[in-house]
Amino acid sequence: MSHFKPLDPLLHSQLRLAVMSLLIGLEDAEFTFLKEQTNATAGNLSVQLDKLEKAGYISIEKSFRDKRPLTTCKITTQGIEAFEAYVENLKKYIQ
Picture (cartoon, rainbow, N blue to C red):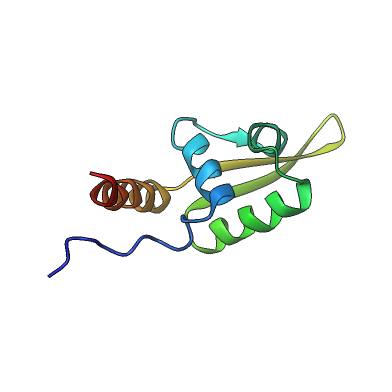
């Protein structure tokens, strides 16, 4: 029996993995910060955040700051567990 476990396809995307890697170490992060850190376009980042939110891996809060829209993302407990499992499974491939 193989000791290689399947990698979570949701996290096996470069941009989604980058977002999760950033959020795992932060309490929360603004959309603009994630966009700058990942060099993603606003449209692509928005689509990928939506996928992570639908999976329950992150929560997204929309509000306003100085009458301007503000989107804040936060990793969920489910997201932390999925990320940690992904990292552990990935280690088995590279050891």
